[in-house]
Image (cartoon, helix red, strand yellow):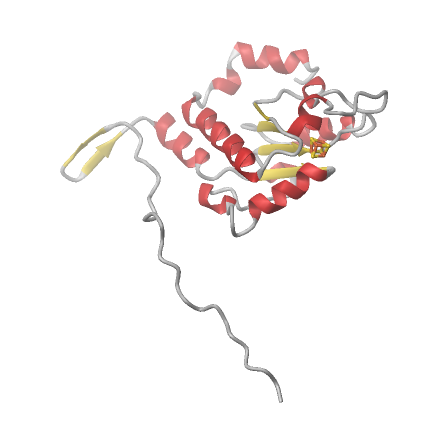
Length: 194
Ligand code: SF4
């Protein structure tokens, strides 16, 4: 005789009501809303960031937890994780990057289309971490420009989410033409990227 199986089907009440993305600044009246193209594009980009997880070790496990139902990165529009650089706009480097792996990180970055952002997750990706050795890259900013660093060894999922929010702030507030700015071009040139 089989035992009866109890399923947890009770609905959990929402702690906070689900909110919509905030409207950009603009002018509104009866039947119209006007704002700048820059704000609309940045609003859309901010809430639909597609991450490319470049996970090489333990920090990647924290990212898996971040994607799980408890932390639920989908709340920020970033549940569409992709392993095709051409379709992603946020490179998340998580874990120890050996010097042999550095050209691969750069190659993945080069294959991503603009606009693209980079997040160094954890001490290893940010600075080599505890591995101050001949074989480990002492920070991915030696090969690609980094927008946000997430500290910790490993960072908790809350810290990774905080990093995503910082990226969202950047995406929301920068001009859609920033990538054409002389400063950005000079930054890329300093990495030998055209
Ligand atoms: S920062 Fe710590 S947890 Fe993350 S990959 Fe390095 S050793 Fe592992």
